[in-house]
Picture 1: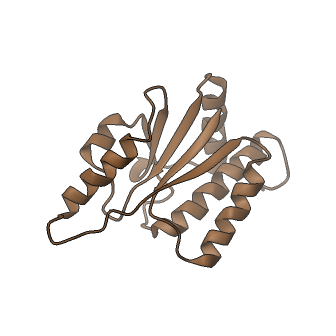
Picture 2 (picture 1 turned 120 degrees about the horizontal axis):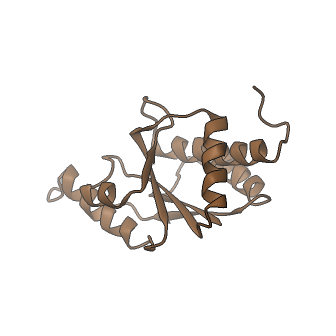
Amino acid sequence: MEIVLLTIGKTSDKEIASLTEKYVARLRHYISFRIENIPDVKRSKGNSPERQKELEGELILNRIESSDHLSLLDERGEEMTSGEFAGLLQKRMLSGLRRLVFAIGGPYGFSKAIYSRADSKISLSRMTFNHEMVRMFFVEQIYRGMTILKGEPYHHE
C-alpha cells in the first residue's frame, strides 16, 4: 500500500519543512509514502472563499483515483488516540487497498465535492492549527502509527 498526503500550497517555514522531511525520511523505512503539494489558489477579488474551495477541490479531485480511499483531515472528523490511528492504518493495509490518500484542505477547508468524494474524515484536534504545522503533526502521527504496529519503543503509553 502507498500512503499519499495531498496538501494545498508549500511549507514556507524552513524549520517546519525540515521537521516534516525528517519524519518523511523515517516513515519511508516502513511504507511507501509521499507528499503531493497542490499549488495555492490565490484569493482574488473575484474569488469568494466558497469559489476558492471549489477551485482547490477540483485540483484535489484531479489527483484522486477511483480506487483510492480518501480521508480528509477535518476538524469535524473522528478523533482518535495514536494507538487507534495505528489500528486504522493496519486495517487499511490488510484490506488490500492500493493507495490511502489523506488530504489537508486550504485555508477555508474543503468543497462540497470533496466532502462527497471522501471515504472518511479524521480530526487531529478540535483546535485549529495552521496548515504547515498540520503536515508536520500528521506525518509524525503516521510514523508513530507504524512504530506502534512494529512494536518499536518510539511510542509510550
